[in-house]
Image (spheres, rainbow, N blue to C red):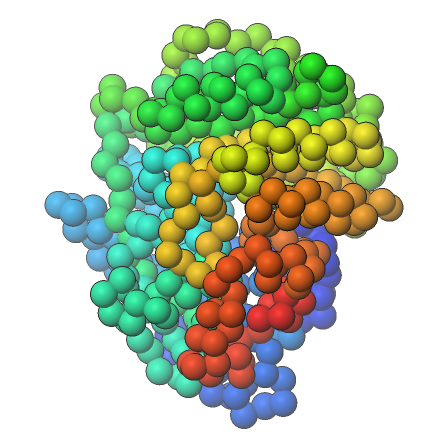
Length: 437
């Protein structure tokens, strides 16, 4: 069958299998080891953007989606890897618990969140998703099942967290949830007129738990990088509202010509100048703050049948302002702007071998797939590389092996560990082959 991930690029010929239990996953691995097609990868909800969950054979984990245990005193939740973040939040938010770290969509499986070591709007305070994972259960290529944590099988734990599914199949995980006292977020919005001002405001608000900026990537001159910075804290009013379901849907792929420099420029200008209560607290529901796009089903269809590429980079603090300014100038000059451009502040890196964040700033932009976009992204790669940065593997669909290997210092350690546990004999994605893993 034809398969793609959320960006709808690339498209792969894939055999999709859906084991329904831990035991059937082990049986599938045994059968695949004995076949000629030894290229498999696990797949959760398919919300990675590129080719990290594409392979000759894909094993879907959606059927292993049960809750196993929860400790009210410690906030430790044990669950199967196919369970979604949405399912966790639907159950636990009304009971006063929240996930310690959430990405931009709640329609991600726990296994996928671990494989990508997803980050959120609070990385500068709380780190990545995996820093709140205390233990995981991993099915190896040999068929053995191991428990991994920072104290037990630690090298395998740090390779599996952010390992893009290349060490084995995560079957279960134990997560530490965060106690909250409301289902709402108190949001404060700050309008900034330049990239320099946006950076200043981020630095002035490092004590704020959540921070994220929408950025106008088509603005030029003195207005380059103008943005709306959204600061957030969990409210404390003891009011809990059941999260609302999605109400809108994009029923078909939009004509790609509708997304152009002029339509995006108009949107960006209107959005930047929208009325805000500057400096005032606004109470909004948590899902509205953390997952604004989840209210629109199939929003990826807006980019047309050929799909889109999300470009997400991180640049260390010392070169972030200069590097981001160069990137925005190049994007604007090429007329390939994005109306989904997000800037966030990162804290320090962790010990996971292929984890993306490092202390600095991260910028994410969406580009519809069209002529000229791939050469532009190659040019952006050179800017990121010159400033000591790297790209996010969960969003990547076209990075070169050379850039990957120069920007992820522990990639050889990852490759050696894959050999040690025979993972390289079975677990492969189109991405891992492209990057030399």
